[in-house]
Image 1 (cartoon, rainbow, N blue to C red):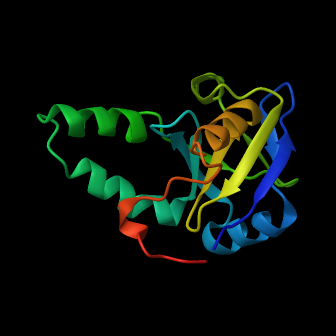
Image 2: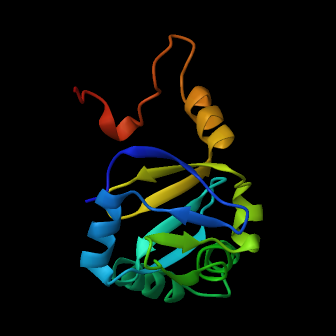
Amino acid sequence: MFKGAANLNMDAKGRLAVPAKHREALFAQSGGELVLTAHSHPCLLLYPASAWEPIQSKIMSLSSFDKKSAALQRRLVGYAEDINLDGAGRMLISPVLRELAGLEKEVMLVGQGSHFELWSKQAWLKQNQEAINEDGEFDMPSELEGFSL
């Protein structure tokens, strides 16, 4: 399970070092074989290859004649790239995906259980601020009414 947020620096070639605790888990789950793709939000999704395969199968089972399904297929599968962690635990993010998510030097790696999200630090801070309502609290989805922490 991937959790926590890390502020990372991407080098000029688009390489990003994965923190050691996550690197070990990614090697254990998939031998360092990963899939990086676009999200509908201004970020990227990073999955161990084994976790991505059933998601891709489900998406591709949708009708390409349906406009919403086709748009989802183009976004998630069309931008998907197979990547590998190198010996130093770094991954290379392609120029296309860097541009799509607005990734520059400062990048946030955010655990989401089965996968990670990669955000530009600016976009991460902006979306966090926008999620707070006038009362200074996060707006909870209706599915969590009555839920307490």
